Structures are given as C-alpha cells and as structure tokens.
Image (cartoon, rainbow, N blue to C red):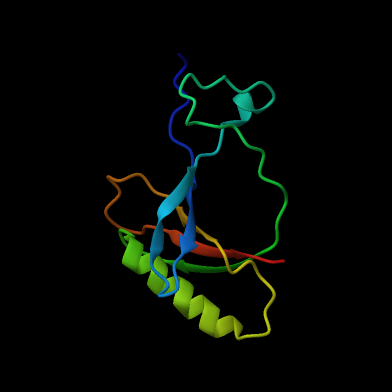
Length: 117
C-alpha cells in the first residue's frame, strides 16, 4: 500500500536459447529503495518474491537507445565474442539492465551483464 517510486536499474534475467534469443521465461528484478531494505513490504501477489542479490563480479557492456530484446541479444553476442572462449562466466543466463524512465528520449543507458563464475 506504499508507493516506492521507480528504481534503477530495472534488471531482466534472460535465459538464452541455443540461437541466443530469449527463452519464454525471463525474470524481472527491481531494486527496493534504501529506506525499505531493512524491512521490505510483503508482496500481496504470490508471483512476486523478495530476493537478496548476492555480491557478484560481472563482465559488462553498455549501449544507448530504447533497448529491445534484439538489442540485448546483439550486445550479449558482442560481449561473448570480446571475452573469448576462456572467460569463466555463467552461460545459462545473463542480465539486461535499463537505467532510464520510458519518457527519456536521449542519453539512455542500457547494459548487458555476464556474471563471473
């Protein structure tokens, strides 16, 4: 019942198919604002879960514009190529992050994260 406002980034966990496209399942994560982190509100919708994201080391690439699935897939492929075959990261998922509200037309920031193993 309390408005928390929008937080950044909005993080989508993508589970890539063999061809690199997203599988049907994605997980959307939102950051809980600082003032609610010690005692987060309990969700009334059972499909919403509160999870604590553990510390992680990531490989990242950044790009602009209004990101669509194809943009994230393309930049994930470029990051994979840049890292080469010897880089140790989780290959069964990656994170797609957007930092800007929908009404911001210019200077948008998006990132793809590979989580280091």
